[in-house]
Length: 462
Image (cartoon, rainbow, N blue to C red):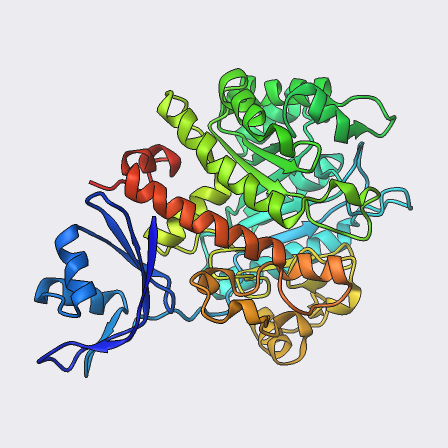
């Protein structure tokens, strides 16, 4: 695939100005035009591609170029890319206790583990509810967090009931190691429409090598039993799967995906590359930059292969980036428009302090408290002016990068945990974007028929 940078030019005989953009070409009938300023795109045929390259797009193409911000004409409205501060995703730290001891965990699990008090939990739910009702928010997500959240299952149920009493029905999303999912918990979660994602790192041997019980024993059987309880309760394959890729699993990316699709009948998962942290006992678990590049290329190749074979599996980060490229929908609060912590998401620790993200280990990053008596929007607007978390991330590599609109320097949380301060950019996300977006564009151009299953029927090129 050839990438061509289109420099700005004026349309002959017109007052229209073409902006700088990138054209991704192949020898077939489809080509991909991308606008790095606004993150918009157009899929072109050969005729329209020639018009772009010759500097003379036709009237019908000009209309679409103006719509998507590729072209400016006097009096036309600019393509809007700004985002307002309006949190609708809320993380609540319920407990630091955990029944597992995962090799890459960044929580202080060997210290005294605490669980949130009923008083503070009710105050947090009340604060979130007031914010939602004041701003007429109905599309709201709540994530009970830990530790292992299911150790505080009764707190989760109480929290769910409190929201219902307020007249709200937020979507509850839990990430669990599944070791505590009994038939009773699975049935109640299903009846309440509480969504549960199960952490699985691959086939039994790989999973057990880095996800052990607190006793030190293997955890796969406990996890699998919990997953089966979810499926038998009515979830079927609709539960999520979260996988952390370390150097242990890096050589076996294809085997992991094959196992999930063929043996476990999983049709979607989130495969996250392990993040560096001072809490991690074994730094050798982290991938090198070259390994991150190689992983992303192999990931896309294997997903395509499985879909060709009739296994409609997708990876959520891939699906979100396809949405970025083709629909510009803001479906991911971490990598659709860079970090949206403190804009679309906030977190609460067990004492009611409010954070832009799940960085509750860094108390100095709190933007306020539910007990301050302050409006959440006003609190965040003030924090944007004062808190280092919200400073723009800068790096020479960002200048002229096609993917800066989506990346914006990457995960602020990852930078803070790795460096102890917020400076520079998240190199891991930078490398991922520079690898994954071109690979996905190549897939869009060459195999558009796979998009339907890879995006769970969200996108189809006709």
